[in-house]
Image (tube, rainbow, N blue to C red; front, top):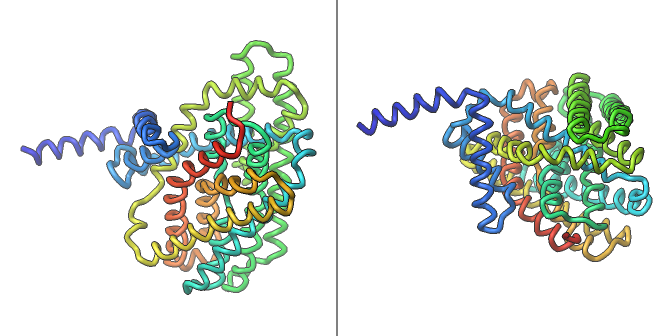
Length: 410
């Protein structure tokens, strides 16, 4: 009897798990209940969203089938575009004049702090230098989504938040350049034939093109919304421009994240009414954020916890990255003569890690050496996934801790 019931439930799961509408619905419901549960034990709701995705995804219950990955990626793309626009909207010239130099200094110190400590730690543990350096470059990436969501949830403001937004925004650009340089050098050493000058030039062109495209989109959005008074019109126009910008960026292999940041930055400097657009988009942000973090949870694979080598190297990766970020921010803030709260707490807000890190490690599949050596590529991917698993569960609570202690709360 129990086997009949079990078989029926499995058939029922198969019938629904491939359906995209069911997948999104169950992720939203799961995110709601797990988010409430997380808040009851004093964890950010984001942690609950990620756990909901992990439990409902293919690694556990399987109510969201892995075949839906490509379809669900659309939601991730939209959420990232909105998050990046919010970050960019904080880049007013007035604020940059006040904090520009310290932000650059702190960004560089935490970027290279994570890179150096992760690379050194993995080499000491026995990993080949080229592979360790690639993972070190990936370690420099920081996921902005969790930090932005926490800041907005807490309604935090002040210099601490300005620093955090600025560093997170600059970090991705620096990470892309660092990764391009390291993979070029490693590629030559491993015999793939990728040239350093070509790789760095390609990365610079990509970043510059993304910023120019985003700036044009921001200017267009300003023109289309400046005379509008009805909220529904602003919402339709804003969302349409953002989605088109993201689609064009991805189609031409540019950075949609950087493009959306640039759009937000241009928008905030062209119009004092930028907050109207941001506040209007906030009306659709909660379900998008919940789905985004839940989808990230579905991508985490529990099988990475079964390999001793992955656990060892992944543990070194996580600890060295955390130390690099925290110590790097502390040293950078000291060099920039920042306030004590920034020096003490800002590093904890740099620990979340997700989409950018996963995207960079999957880029290895385009490099000839790694295409021909799938076992090595799989190992590096699993180490990064292990890091994402740990950092996406522990990073948001630490970011919340940093924002509560370092920023002004309304």
